[in-house]
Every structure is written in structure tokens, then in C-alpha cells.
Image 1 (cartoon, rainbow, N blue to C red):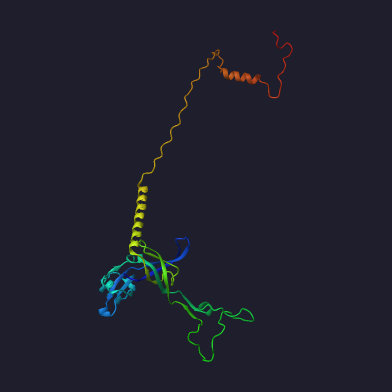
Image 2 (cartoon, helix red, strand yellow; image 1 turned 60 degrees about the vertical axis):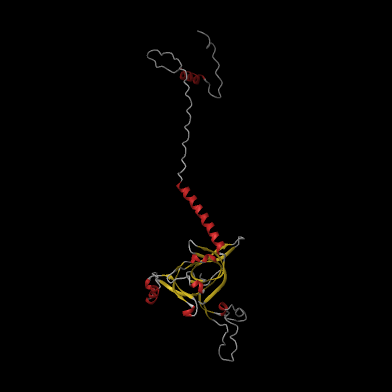
Length: 307
């Protein structure tokens, strides 16, 4: 299908290869495309297709552009147009107003080149702009970040091609043959190896340089969908299953009550309170027991004889 597609740079991350080595990677979000015009060899001398992308508010689109989109039967307000060459047989499979999604061709890209506008650095000197070493730091030098020589003075002008201070950055840069690590169809995310030019949120152009086998990629994606469906089914079953009921703990067995025999007590005479024999016996023992550390007193003479 197409070999070039615009994308939005989201930022950088890191991925692991098969050997467990971490590698830097750039994350991008490709745009959906709409066919605005077809150019043929008979009419224009070459075969190409004009595509529109980046939907925005109507106030950001001029009236001529709105008329061009309306003529192609596109109801979306798209901000940008670009043209890409395609083969004559592929041009016949495209229709004006057709909506092209990145998931139709990006999963089959193995390597790609990324072009964009680099970050602007402003006016810079030769040490940062051209990696000059500067002048010596000793022997009375007061300015160190400058070129050692300005070149020949005979022409009385600066020769073309000499490396001098000036504006740095903010120019088109292309990084070639980057490995495409992954294209996530569900979230429309493209991950490529290394760094690409431009700031976060900048516009970049991704061009295919190597294509993968379509049949193998489709089989791998089908296996991925099946595995994911099984995981989702297991999660649904786990959530819908009733919570395990906790069985009540068995009641503690009551020990049998042993009935103690009743102790017969003598009836107390009238006018005197009845005393428990066990209590009265304990009191007698307390009274008769000697205190600790004392020897029992010997009975006096005649104390034990009967009077």
C-alpha cells in the first residue's frame, strides 16, 4: 500500500531485545489518512495520491481547503495535505474519499527511515556547532570559546563553505534504517529503534525501507488475539464466581456436669445460725495451725489432766 506515513512523536522509552539488553526506542502515533485526489500518468505524467490528515477545529482550516475536502466527499476538517507516489496498479485500488487506517499496512514494516525538523538551538559558536576544540587555556588567553583562525585574509571576505558560528538546528534531518520493534494495533502506537529528530509532539515522516512476511505477521497476531481472549474469559469467570462461603466453626462440646453428692449437715439448735461443716473445719485448722517459723508450745503441767 503506502510506503510513507506522517506520525506524531510522543517521546522516548526503552525496550529489551531477545538477549535481555535494554535499547532506546522512540514512540510515535501515526495519523489516519483520507484520499483527496489521485494523479495518473495519462493526466499528470506520474502516478501519485494526495492525502489529508490531522483533524482539527474548522476555524483552523481555510475555505479553499474546506472546498477541496468537500469535493472529495470528506466530512472531517483536516488540516494538512501531502502527496506520495504509488504504483499504477496500487492507484487503481484507491478511491477518492477513502479512509486509510495505519493498521492496514504498518504491522508489515520491518525497518523504516524517519525524517523531521530537528530542535532549534539558536545562534551557536563553532565549538558547539562544529565541535571545534577552541584555543589554549593558558598563556594569557582571555577568550577560549572561539576558532583559532578565521582563514585567509587575502580575499578580504569570508570564503564559502568555511565553518563559522551561526544558526544551529531547526532543519530537516533523516535517520535511516531504524528497526521497527512493534506496532500496537489496539492503541495505534509505533515503536522504532533509537532516536528520531524533533521535539515531543512534533511531526515526523516514517518511510518503509524493509517489509516483513505478511502471512507470518497475521498468524502471530491471531495467536495473540486468542491468548488475550482466553485471559479475558478467565478474568470474567473469576469475577462472576460467588465468593467462598466461610463455614461456621464447630461449637465447643460442653463438658458433662458431674453432680456432687450432698453432704448431710446437722440441724443447728434453735436461736443459733447454721454453719457449714467445711467452713467451720477450715477455721478450726487456721486457729490451731502454728505461725510459720514458730514451734508449737508445750502444754503446761497439769493442763492435759482431767480436773
